[in-house]
Image (cartoon, rainbow over all chains, first blue to last red; front, side):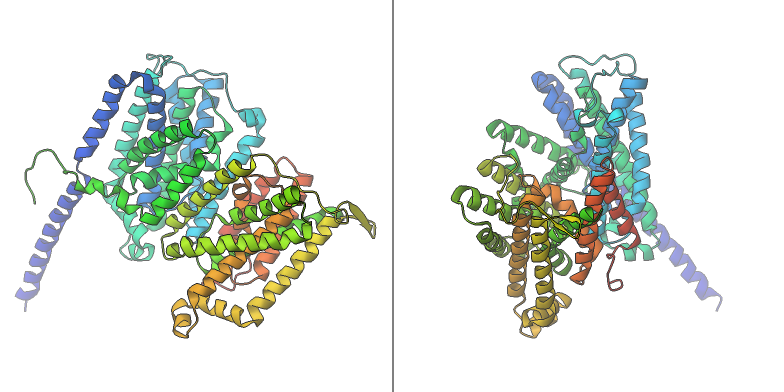
Length: 345
Length: 285
């Protein structure tokens, strides 16, 4: 009588132990640095030396990439369709501009302040997206984006209204590196922020936390049953995404020395969704690949048809959806996972 | 004061006609169609072209706008939309944004980016005095037409065989098909009818709302507000929501021009938080 229960506890604890090691192994496997990631960052550095005349468009790509990666955390992991992500981008842009104009011209400080401001807005508005269906969320995010645009437009004494903010120039980065005329320092600065931001979000997304977000995306009710606090997780993810979106906005302000009300326009929210669709959602780097392709296509189109490039962007969206957007990003799975093969499976 | 109320009612009626097609696609077929405004714009431009280029009477333009928009809606539904009824919402959003972008650029290409104007027939322009209240004749005309349409819509949905088929198809698609109802046909016709109504609204609204290539984007949020605030289970819900929105918007623009739109968006968000299923929904579904 006394032997049997003991045996079962032993086997149970040993199976828990193996399950734990297996889980740890799986998590490690999931979060491993992939082959293509190294290529991306090498390419980003190489571009600095190989394409010195294309610094401005490269900077644009880096900023859009950071913006898209931050949206992927919300869309690809937490599964929230947001049409108002540009609210955070725009807020960050304006905060960075106002910082540089009135208080402190050092860019990194401005970047952090902008990130914090957007994060606060993200935290406050995240409670609004917890309720209701996809449509309700869509409406709420869209409404927040439009409200921000309206605020920026009406508070002309602060934001310059329709004319935007101008007449400020960011100081040297950390007091050492002055922005130059060709945008070389600006590019390195943006790539640096993109790298750090992506690495932080990567750490978040490929942790158990990120996995629980995906569970919420899959089925909120079931994830609640396995003790995943869905509301808390969504609030956190949304806030983090808002912080980085704000930083992307701040980068745009600092590299162009100008803030226009366009940073809050609706088409920016649509653009960044398109970027993610091109690059694929749910693995963060989709934002980067998508930003590269999107910016190149847009640049090419706006040379061919300066006025009507929007038509082709729309056509692209329709075609992408109809042929199935998952097919585009599947190529990543065919790449080798790592350079050298060793250990497990 | 009463004039503002009157203008608001006219505006709200227009919004209802514009948005009621969306109520069906969005609420009943569960398709997030952000491109609804594009159909309204099509109707508006049909009117502008017919009136200003060919000199056809305004009264003939209204049915023409309805028919052209309905045909466009029918063709698009059969070729593109029907494949996406079961797709995730993100796909539907992206798809319809794509349609909006294409519509904007195409309109810009063919018609130019400027604001389009139409010349109303003389008996509809100007104001008249009714019991001391200044009443725009065209607005009175709008109210009468839209109220008649709303009534007809309610009757069609509740009394006719087509209406009961549609409600059956919406309540349970599979069972309705099992009963021999041709659900795709019902949906296609409904979509076309909704697009046609939007086109009619666009034609009538060219005078009040203005008409330029950015029309679908500018009014997208208004349509969505009407639908999400009014709920989608009845005709009267969106109707009341549209009236409220119209009055609030006109009054807001008149009394507090600086923060008018801001108030509308804020109200919408509060409404969505308090009643996520709409103001007049019949319980949670």
